[in-house]
Image 1 (cartoon, rainbow, N blue to C red):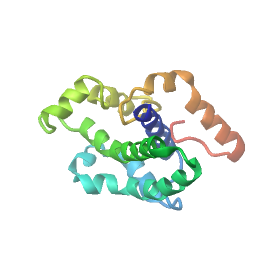
Image 2: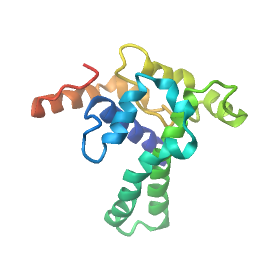
Image 3: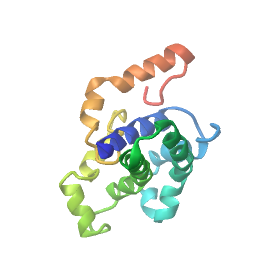
Amino acid sequence: TTYTLADLGSGIFHWSVDNYGNSKTPILGNIIAAFQGHHTAPWTITERGFCNNVHKLCYPFGVLLPGLSYFMGNTGVAGLLSLTLFCWFEVMSQELHKWTHQTSAETNKTINWLQKNNLILSRKTHNKHHTMPFDGNYCIVSGWNNGWLDRSGFLRWMELRIWERNGVESNSW
């Protein structure tokens, strides 16, 4: 369940930073600039080392984890473990994403096997995000939620609500 929720969370987060804000947005500006810039030069993610690739997501989740644990109350070890794993998968989503932009020769056998068996985001699945009309397939942990999330129209519905309330158009329009 935690893995599936992390995939969904990565998709909603990815959609939000792809479509709203810019480098000057308070707090998330650097993350937004990196996600939006990735569409101009997607191969650059493969040139980043592990720490350089994931560190930007460590900050928000590092801040969120203690606060969320407090608000979850006494959920015991299982609740804390689920929350910690959720945050870990969110941070690792950047590395999982990076592997989809590398060739099978550039990743190890285990990564290739996990991608081939759709246990982590595959190259084929993620390639759809970089294909016209560039408005779907945002989930980057496993990609398991992409199909229903895109078919449901939920993200388009969210874009309309944001536009109606704030007059801000999604970048995917």
